[in-house]
Length: 225
Length: 259
Ligand SMILES: Nc1ncnc2c1ncn2[C@@H]1O[C@H](COP(=O)(O)OP(=O)(O)OP(=O)(O)O)[C@@H](O)[C@H]1O
Ligand SMILES: [Mg+2]
Image 1 (tube, protein in one colour):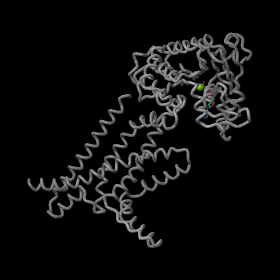
Image 2 (image 1 turned 90 degrees about the horizontal axis):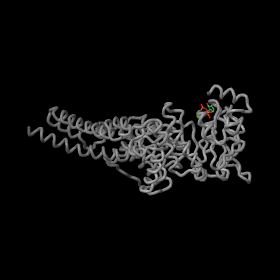
Image 3 (image 1 turned 120 degrees about the horizontal axis):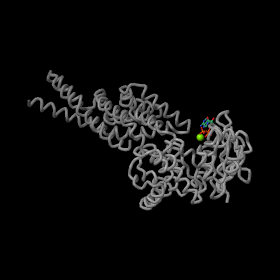
Image 4 (image 1 turned 90 degrees about the vertical axis):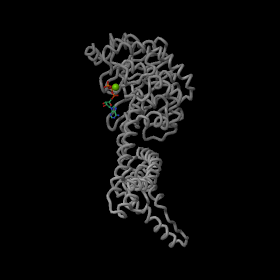
């Protein structure tokens, strides 16, 4: 029993890192995704093309590769640039920072697609109604279109939110201490699978909380239907 | 005073000529009905008048300000593919004098009846919430829906929705109201309540252009009736003349089919 408590404590300590990463990524990727979605719907061909390449790259390559690239690749790149230009550029990036950057950029690409589809699903008549009332683009988006979009993007966003819980486990690959790593260390040390089972339970709690929260949000945003 | 002056306007969708040399003048307090067969360009004309569509040729003035066309100095204004010398902002300012009511209401579904009405006065005109609510309640009283103040559009009938849409447009204090088949999406028993509201507006001397299939209504309230066919106004006359003795034989055939 004591063993289980000890292991669980260690795993929960690892979970703190996982949770921090999770919330920081949500904080960055949602607004970034929204901005990119507006870019996709922009009238400017250049903006469209730029954000098109962005989502193409980040949705089309493995997240793990992107993580390696930021953590191992970027410092090498900077060192090479430094060597070529004679400037002493040497950076080392912390695993947590690398994870935040990579996950935020990657998830923003997915969120952008969801937001774009959500915005495009709003009837053209809503834009026209806002326009004939004298509202400008910004007022129309913030007061009329985006509030209606929220309800429609909640279900696909919930899927992403669940996937993100599980994707945080990839940070093991850049040696960041997290929930899964705490469990794996205990397994290799003690030759027992109990830590894995505990880790699975903790992940299940996380994803269940996400589902419940989104369920509540959906209810809140469907009062007008 | 001339409220709307459209001169020789042309509008194409791709290669389809939808409006061909259409001219229309609407004076203050006039009620104009626009009738004609489906696809004749009635909606498009209305949408050009408040800049929901850009015209290809011709000019449109609202209360003396150009929103499209060439001004007195021959400068091109907001014509497709021509250089803009009038900004979208100026056009929007002029078009604020025009209210519009759509066939399918286009109420904001995420806002209550009251919120639908106070939205534009608050965000566009920066009116205080208290004042906006006060005016909205007066308008709701006028259209007979004060008791629906706090419900969402999904909870009211089509006729009620259209009356809210009218109140929403009136909340911006327009000088001109455009109606595009305001009763065509309604069950027959709900048509009357909407027409009653429009008739009230006519009594208050609101300047209005109404696209409609309700011939009795057009005959009763209009000062002039405009008949459109294949992108052209083929007759613009008093209701008496147009409904009893139109110059154009095609109008006779159309009216016989309608009644
Ligand atoms: N956005 C558009 N793109 C392409 N064609 C269009 C568009 N809007 C209208 N049209 C075409 O222009 C013509 C005139 O349409 P409009 O809607 O003005 O007719 P209408 O007189 O209002 O007809 P109805 O009585 O059916 O409403 C039609 O042939 C229609 O198909
Ligand atoms: Mg029409």
